[in-house]
Length: 415
Image (tube, rainbow, N blue to C red; front, side, top):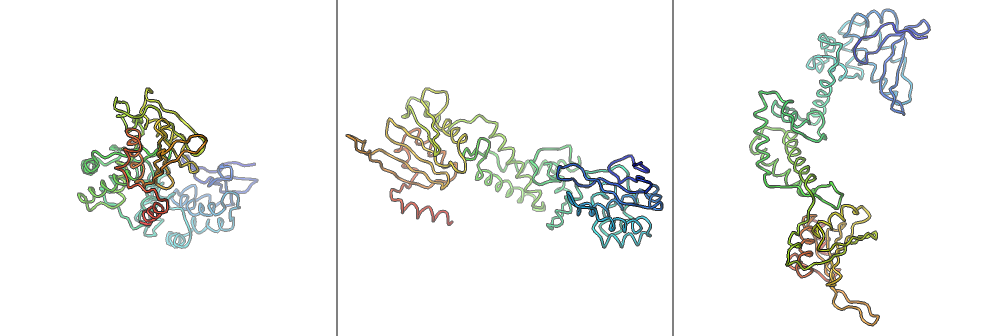
């Protein structure tokens, strides 16, 4: 039989119960293997109950001291009841100096105290009892999260100035640097907002006209890493020149914002090819065949609604995978084609020298070239669609000797 003897009205405070005539403190902490909250219980005395009931600060300090024991128990271990009981007199009945000394020796949960109003400066100096004079029953979890974020930064040697902090709040990355950034002017102190907007304007000017293209080799929504790196570098260089006092965290969050917005614009723009000329009267291609290394195939004809390169890159984004990185475009009518090797950043152009006759095999000329990322692939595909293998000549050098090509590829990769 369990009866609640004392509980506070707010939050997850440990509560006092009477179970089979014995007073116990029970609290929820952590989770079990099924992600359900775990509950831990250990015995207390009447003198402990009196302090818990009368003194919010001591109640919070006890909670902070017991939580690490619960963490140690993990998802299925037992609470070290002896250690928990040993904390009762030291936390609840000792003079403030004794409590402060205890908290210098044990693990304790700082964020729990910060959430309930602890004075952070006093807390950092080890004056835990004095820090809890302003304790509140209602928790402010955001305050605790910000405190934890500041401690993580301090461990990296980063100290935010007012403008640094305002920029991180504006992008929504004050708490978590991996959060997708957004523009949140309401999160910034109005007195600092004009300065933040000047920093953002500097970043926008630095990347004006730049774009981050899609990279269909990695799916429908993936973007070009090189484009992203170029934009990030341009933004960071401009912001650092204009505001040398900003810490790296603030500079990077601004470039992250610019890059994320540019990537979102690319993802929301209808995908078209780079070969709009192939719809004109001068186009040489009337039909093309796309294939991959897994038996996939797609046909494109000139009178269709989309350009050849748009259809090809959609085929790539649908089919490309870690074990499917070779794609081919073939013009059967002209006896030529290109083969893209995404795994090696290279391409082959294949031209029929002699068609097979009387049962003989056809003869092909195969030449290889290195490719500079997805941007290079797009140029080559567009050139082939417009003008065939001959149009690729200017995009060389082209090597027919496989050994020579492999040496060139190794030299490039070594750089």
